[in-house]
Structures are given as C-alpha cells and as structure tokens.
Image (cartoon, rainbow, N blue to C red; front, side, top):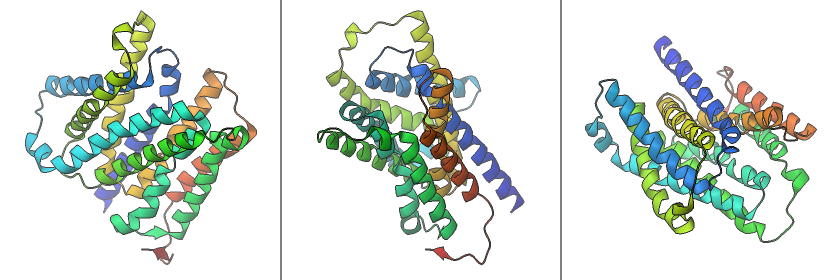
Length: 301
C-alpha cells in the first residue's frame, strides 16, 4: 500500500509538472511566427525524434514487444492526438479563444462523467462537487461571460472545440488501457502517429515552401518541440498508468490556469476579477478533490 501511494505521489508530481509546462507554451508561441498546424507538426515530429535519440543515447532499447502488445490503444490515442490538435486549430479559426478554451476544457468533465461506466471508477459526491466548481471556474477564466458570442457562425467553432474536447477525453481514457510499457516508448509511438495524421492536413492547408524563421523564433520552436512536447508528453503519458482518470481530468485544469496567470504577468494581457476568481475556484477544486475522503461517503458507481 505504501509503495502504491509513493507511485501515485510520483505520478501526480509528474502530471502537475506536465500541466505547468503545457501552461507556459503560450508565452513561447508568441515568438514563433508560424501557423498553428505547422507548429503542431513540428512538435509531433521533432518531439518524437528528440525522445528517440534520448533513449538511444541512454543505451536503452525501444520495446517493440510492448508497443505491439498495446498497438490498438497506442494507435488510437496517437490518431486522436493528431485530430485533437487539428480540431482545436479549426475552433480558433471560427470562434474566440475564450469560447474555444471553454469548449476544449469540457474534456475533463466528459472523462469524469463516463469513468464510472467505462473504467468502473467510483464517482463520489465530493468529486462531483469539485467538477462542478471547476467547470464554473473555467467559465470565468475563459472570459466567455464577458466576450460572449457575436455571430451565429461561431456555432461551427463551438462544434470544432467540442470535437477537440471529445478527442482529448478519449486520449485520457485510452491511456488508462495502455499497460506494461515505458513512458518513452508510449510517447514516441503516440507522437509519431500524431505527426502522420497532421502531415496531410498541414500540406493541404499551408504553403510550407514560403515559411521562414529568424534565429530567435527557431530557438523558441525547438524549445516548444523538445520541452513542451517531448519531455512534457513523456511526463503526461508516463503519469497515467498510476492515476485514476478522474484525477488526471481534474489536474488537467492546471494547464489553462497557468497559461492565464503567466500571460497576465509576462505578456501583460488583461486578467479580469472574474478570471482571478475562476483560477482560485479551479485550483481549489483540484486540491480539495485529492484530499482523503471518508470511507463512509456515498459514491456513485
């Protein structure tokens, strides 16, 4: 039991670190003058290559047996990761960042609500309350209550955002089924498959031959590919084997909160009082959700 709790504590630390890294990507994104689809393709391919070289330099071997054993769920999760990125980019094209963010972060809610049925995880009343509070918090953080929706055409953006959320939720759930494989092998495979999915989309939507980069933007792109993708996804996927889907879902809200706070601090982007309240609600709900529960508490199964 003690060993299990230590593994879970380590997994939570890995997940929190991954969410913090994901949350800082917006700052670096500001200095990369490239379309989002091109950045995503670079993230998947360069992140995969970095991890592959890292594993080989450490003298380790890729376990093709473990990959083969988990090929179905690895293939699906990598495929969904690519489409998750694509739909999120399309959501940004048709609606505001606030609305797209709100739709996208419905994913943790989806995971928590279906986990009792698909993963047989108990959903306690406290967890349900924390989910509700986090949802209210992310509404405040997104700013959608202040920005609103001005055109009916934004419905398309909302649908793309919800589609991205569905794929994101599916990735969380599928990773619960991937067993007996190292974090590196898992991440290399999933990023590689995501890159294959993104390649035709990027070629169809962007003129790659006209892309130019300054030395600063090249450095920023490499940081995003190596740290925000290779390392962060290794931490993210590596944490999933020892945590419940509900925990992973709630901790996912750390990402947008960190992004909002850092953008206010370093990019001087406006953070409203409602946004600050929302950040407190989300982080508070995440923290309280992981406090020990009474054994007598009723749960929904």
